[in-house]
Length: 302
Image (cartoon, rainbow, N blue to C red; front, side):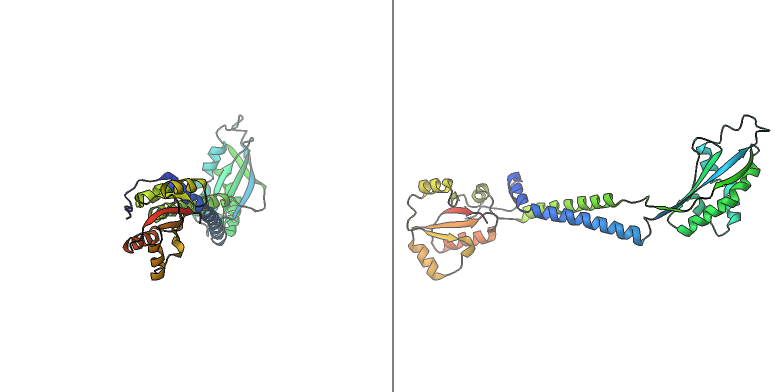
């Protein structure tokens, strides 16, 4: 009679490992599928939603300083200062005058300033995913920024130095990250499902599994092994006249039961991990009800 009660035993790491090895291909497949889905989803989003293609215009402006009144030149117009000035109201208001269709929010999110080395050479960088908008903002700065010189005594004038062409680049490409995230999610899902499978799987994977269920019936070992031969000889002695029954071939048949009762006992063959607890329970209970003695069990690889 089975003494097995689902959930009554602790976690058997060796049993988990045997189950995991047999299902490793599922983990690999789901992880790979997750990576592919993550990559595909990102590509669809980035291209269809226009979140990946970025346009930029980098125009250089030359700042003529008022050395007549400021012979030493100003020492406070660095990159940080100009980056702020380009988004301050005095400049933005001039830009909006040049192109009233623009909004202040569009300008503030698209413009930044750079000064590399020579503080007289200012680079205005306009960046964003809308090609037409970026071009209109850049053109508006070409008109509005020079007018800002009238507001600062130390600046004589500001002139456009280079009128650059628009460039296209993928600043926000995250293909690898999306694929990695998809793979991690796929791996986590597959491992979680295997853990659930471990909980509900009542297959026999080891002698411990068998003895936890049927402590009165000896598991003799793997059929054909030296262990099984020695155990069978010691426990059962001469097996001649015993009936060997495969769990996968069991069926209710009166003639078969009569043959089993006429034998010296039954040796049951089960496939490791393949023949489930419900099936084996049914066989063991049926043999008991038919007054057939179950002498021992041999395992076979599925």
